[in-house]
Image (cartoon, rainbow, N blue to C red; front, side):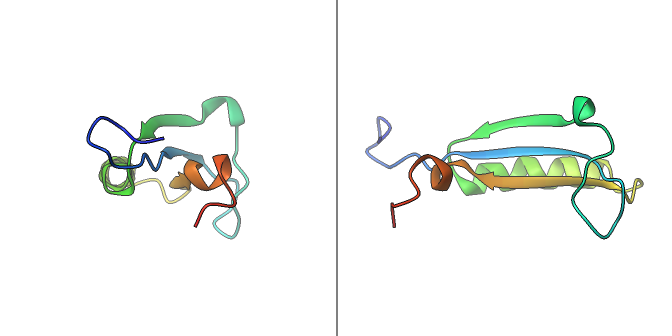
Length: 78
């Protein structure tokens, strides 16, 4: 689906939380996940991700991720 400018939306989710170990991606408490938001493109998602990651730099177990929602919604798109 395209937006008003004619460009295709490439939705991205930014979220994070505290990990149980630095060697994996298991979260300490799923109820405490920080859902930052859904963004219309990678660049805006990356800006939000970077801000959250830098704000939590003192906690080594805190991690933020960017999920390419557009790939999950339409896995056969190229």
